[in-house]
Image (cartoon, rainbow, N blue to C red):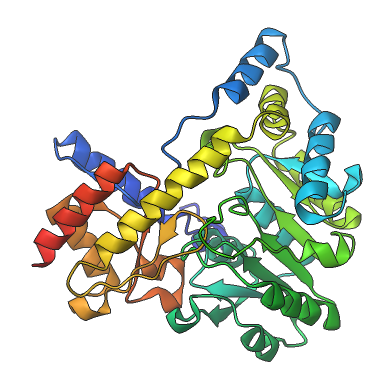
Length: 389
């Protein structure tokens, strides 16, 4: 009998998609399910972006593109980086990728050897753990604490450094907690990486999604080295431009790292479709009003869901400062995260994600993505309350 590779047995995927599949099966059986499990904006991609892709398709822009990306998209991304982060990366520092998720794989595969260590926030994005495990890289977890608003503590990072550490991953605003790191915390993490000559992978996919009712701003470690020495920015169009299905992102990093990541992309994917890249150019160059409007609406939804969750017996929830997730504490319900999730899906028809899929320190929490209407959020809260009463 043929056997699978050792690496194949390490694959875990993204559990949220597995929850979605189960929820959709219940829908096929006739049950109404309210979806809070997957981080997918419920807004349509802005019309000007869609039209740019249609125009490119009609113009025959359907062939291979340069594997590292169209120069026009790189130039647009460099312009945005100059405005948002204070430096203009060179074209050789930019790589157009099929979404931001795969950048984590490309970066880790190109700068970390099997058996080496990568420091990862826990709870954190599920793909960090899945990718590193698949590559045979040791995961060093830094537990995030509710008392600290789930922000990564630089002192904890400092204590975790060993001679085998090769990379630190940070994610601000965070998935799954919505936490936003302070400027001082980002600077301290960068200083630690510089002192130990480590790569710093900064997942900034939610950088545009910080709420105006706080004094919080997005801070990137790239301001300290302009992505020339150690900082690798993971960013994409999925969340802020409601383009999850388009699979488009731009990585920024040291030229030698980007070059190797580009060869890996060339080997596995060839290139990103040029008509999709044309849509990305329009997203960056065109009106940003739809994005501003979306973020304002997400803020209203955040306020609604946080207030609602805090009204449910046994549930408490911090108000996140960014992204579109809440990470409520459900410990006082007496249920485990899995039990709570199962109960809500089976009895309330509310699909959400158990905390432990985001790391060992996620027990006692669940994640809800509030990329949903206020009406649906209110309905979900009421259903959850009824089930727990």
